[in-house]
Length: 291
Ligand code: AMP
Ligand code: MN
Ligand code: MN
Ligand code: MN
Image (cartoon, rainbow, N blue to C red; front, top):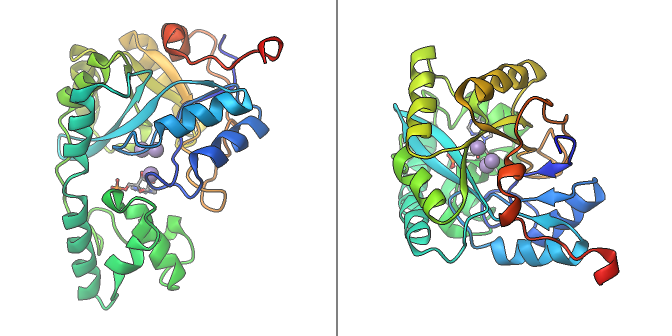
């Protein structure tokens, strides 16, 4: 069960990835994935296409999303898996979470103009497959295209992050709301890439405790954002808090992502994989005998 090649975290052109849901499904299949979820930021507009593409190439599928949350003045990402895409409260909540991205992007561009980088809003928008979901990733692509930085990793070291040019503080969803939207739509909430946050030990304890209190059930342990030491550390956290464990590449683009779809270590054997608890929510691909 823990050796299943599940990839439950990636992005398409519907948010800040560069491939379509169909291209991602085919790429996941080609890299040996058997259970897949598309988890665009704050947006489920790609879910029907992803599920259809998964069925067409013989992949089991879980609906997915990655919700931006503000917790103790930091941005935390909460993955939702296996929810009903037609749920009204989830749809409205995601819409509210997306609102304000355009205004934020204008402010980011104004801050970059202040240091002589002009035309960043229009430049970033060109990369946004979905203009309502203009994100820092699209600004990063513009800064690489114009030669300001050599790659997007350099961008996030020098720009667009706290204290650096182009950063604009933003208020996302509440942790409680995000977890409830997901769980009340029949899905499971999962803390994404916990090692990426800069919380103190006490703040992290508050995050896990409140997340569980609101009904959250999982944590990403094996992700493209974690080193193997970080995976080991959050495997222990999953056991300590009684959380199921998830696995996902966080793939965005063949040219930018360090981790390929499905190319991850297995989940440690002592953990309960999220797909065990979500068995009823998996959209099963037809077996060859049924085709
Ligand atoms: P946004 O939702 O507009 O704040 O954009 C956040 C996105 O930027 C993430 O989902 C990543 O795709 C990308 N990103 C890449 N590196 C970093 C980094 N070091 N810090 C924050 N975001 C990053
Ligand atoms: Mn992203
Ligand atoms: Mn994330
Ligand atoms: Mn992600």
